[in-house]
Image (cartoon, rainbow, N blue to C red):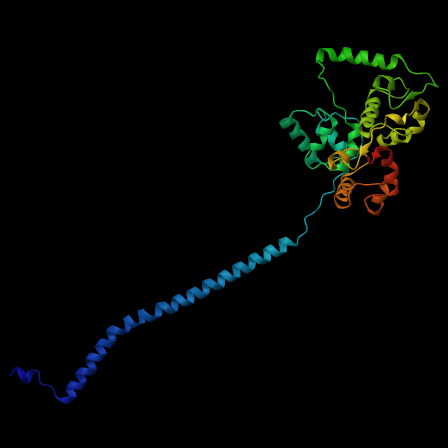
Length: 303
């Protein structure tokens, strides 16, 4: 009897199969939808994110490009007047260095040097300042005045009064002539118009030159030659000469009339062609002019 209950005709079996398929489909469709639809949504969201990122990077490039070519407003700075005067690098302040024509960053370098290295003991030490060019050094060297001794404050006024009295106590009469290469600062101060500062400038520059060979050389330290000419004679026998066949580059460039490039030319010429027989051999180099030979010839020897 139970067999009759589970017996189905062919049409009924086909209907049952269709019904089963429909039931399976009803349960499978949501699962299939969840399987495929997230990928599509993910792809669309990823494309949206990439689009927003591209727009953001493009806006950054536009801002960067516009700021790169935007000119910053320049503020007019007043040009500082350059005034050369005697100064002590151990006591001068930054304003003094700016007045001498040095930039502010170099003035800071000088102050830092004083803090770390102590004090300048001689004018040549000023060359050690970082960033100072040879041209700046040569320009300022005649004006460097280093106090050899620190004077106590309680004696400063007394010594200043004595110094003024010594300077004004005695001056040479008109017609007196002294040797410019032999006079010391005390004797130079007896010339009317020459005080302590100018006397030291003359002696310092004379030592650097290796003595004077003509009165016009005082123009190198900005002195009025015609005013001083009647007071001086010059004995050239005291001139110190540099042997350019043996001197090093440093020794040659220490002279005010020989710069670094000229000293290098002489050194390279010696290496390539041997010792110099005449200054005319240097005439082929553009570093030397006829005026240079005229200036340095009294201070040069070849053997």
